Amino acid sequence: MSSNTTLTVDNKAVELAVKEGAIGPSVIDISKLYAQTGMFTYDPGFTSTASCESKITYIDGDKGVLLYRGYPIDQLAEHGDFLETCYLLLYGELPTAAQKADFDYRVTRHTMVHDQMNRFFTGFRRDAHPMAIMVACVGALSAFYHDSTDISDPQQRMIASMRMIAKMPTLAAMAYKYSIGQPFVYPQNDLDYTSNFLRMCFAVPCEDYKVNPVLARALDRIFILHADHEQNASTSTVRLAGSSGANPFACIAAGIACLWGPAHGGANEAALKMLEEIGTPDRIPEFIARAKDKNDPFRLMGFGHRVYKNYDPRARIMQKTTHEVLSELGIKDDPLLDVAMELEQIALKDEYFIEKKLYPNIDFYSGITLKAMGFPTSMFTVLFALARTVGWIAQWSEMIEDPSQRIGRPRQLYTGPAERDYVTVAQRG
Image 1 (tube, rainbow, N blue to C red):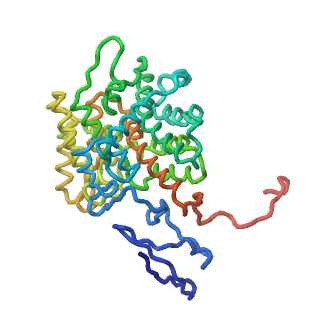
Image 2 (image 1 turned 45 degrees about the vertical axis):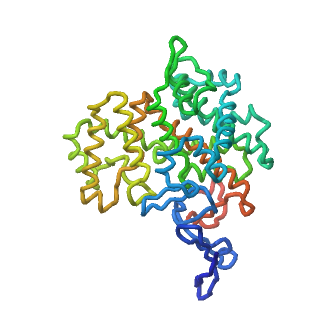
Image 3 (image 1 turned 90 degrees about the horizontal axis):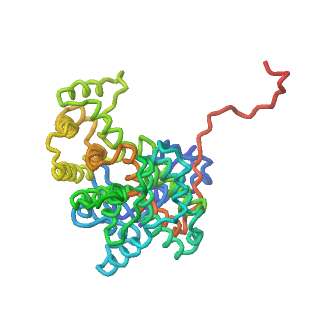
């Protein structure tokens, strides 16, 4: 369904189409604006621009709504598992029992990586950041799997999708093991996706390792909450790279590189460091006062969200998950959690936070949970990348199949020097 609106430029009326989505704001189609007016629009950060049409994820930041293919995030996290969510994001519908069994089987049978990848890791220093390793290794997959890089072949696209969802946990666990000097642990096909990942991270050859089902379920829920988030910076990066026809492994590597930024994937690590800096609940007023001081560079991390102007819907689920993990591990008097809980209550009641809508977001709780599970802060963004891989792939596949998709080419407002003539070195003042 569409209508028209009129834009007047230099006393000239220009008709622009208005397109309506299934839910959410309508959009003004400005694709022919330059041809009709000789002008571009100016939108730093593209915060008011719809760069594509998508059927995958819907966010209403004002109401605190997040839907995957129409399903509320809390229902999926509460009742489903991560691979079921992967199937939903990739194919558009929740799987039947038979479809799920087949999908789980295919993913499980793709978890091994080429044995030469082991030697690839030895080229990195032991103290290399795991995200640096992930960018390199995921990009290198295209050098190992030539039979799934032809983006024009639907079969190859499907195989590449399966491979990335399956191999990302293996590579992430290898990056972790390499950083701590332990031998790699190969995947085990009789375990579910998340239990397999935990075993690859924390098992050692000299003793048996039993996966804690409470921790496995908690991490699986974290993966669901991070699986996709509409056209964020890393997803837009994957789409932009994919618009050039780059192979899928290169596109996902580009997304990982973007996610590495502290304003994006590193936010939960920053939130944890902030809680550690505060230290004890009695110091919270001091840091809140600093946060309110415009002249103080200190910022409260884990509060507010660029999209959500209400409570982050994922934060409620994450808060519950945090309590479950700490309870299972017997962590009753965790100082970080004490600070987090007190800070949350103050933020929900303080007029400054309410006025600016600085509600706790998912990063506020996820850092505490991952730390309690035994993951170092350097691995937090790697786990984010693992979970987001399916969202990137779903968005990339949708873009490839969109007949209206063209290579990304944002325009600019040029403010540099106007045309000028070259002057030789001898003539320059």
